[in-house]
Length: 445
Image (cartoon, rainbow, N blue to C red; front, top):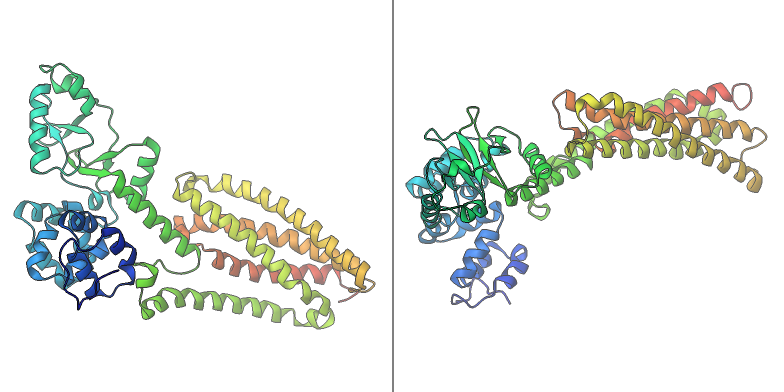
């Protein structure tokens, strides 16, 4: 049971697992009381496990005397994330809670864009000079670990100007003779990322090389910090969530779903809905253009949903596959010709399959119910031909639209499934009735 704000609770009276389970359901005042009821060690672990947004919210609710304690628990990169999540007017006060060294480090991190490697990195890492002995290096690393290091994955070898020269593992250090120099056992084949590299590109580097930490360097190869795999896990989740939301036909949310206010949710979703509605008005206009054909051959109307939805489905499939391939680095802008050729063949093949099914549907219904009159074979050829054209067109448009958006500097994920389907709807009506006018002229039309 979670204590209420009105109840007096002693530290240690609550289990962290119980509070974590109920956290999102609790009002702010009960969150504070529940947090203060945890034992000190549990409270530290709990605070570190919270997202940056949740940490910022909790900090704003804690008594002033307790805020400094929890701000100083965070490493510089996490403190920077918390400050970025806080309201603009609260940020100077949060910075003032940090010690001078950490404040300097956090200010340097805040100078980077939030989505760059520089904004992700931790400026505290294990470093040694190349000319020291292994024994001296181990002693120095022990001192660093006691004083300022939160995590130690690799040992980075820097010169006096902080240029990255090499990297060594702790296994290398502990297994080497004590008097051996670090430069003699370090590896100079180092995977690095630039401080301005986008976080999505950084995640690809991690996936490609299967590393725990990657050094961040500037243009002169001076080392600025490290990005660790736990940071990238958060990045991958964030990027995937953003892409999925955009593919769904809306702007990406900036907070968990249940924490987004009514007006913010409206703003994120209604714009795309309005744009898609306007797009569908073009479909209505296209149908109005063929009003005469529809009046003379009402049977054609029955197949409109079948045809345009098939084209929309094929286009949505293609756009989703290409967007994801771009996100994973499997497809680049220069691959557009290969993708177009590949998807054109696929779309044509899919179109033939659906065209055959559509043809059989018309013939079967005619045999069972006499639904389409004496010219049913012409109707069948019209429907199957339209399916072939619309599915091929939808697949081609769905696969190429992400490339167009990437070329224009926009996010390819904006080529959402609803957007592609709306484009194909308009083209589908035009293809269908144009084909019907040609095939059925002199019979039904």
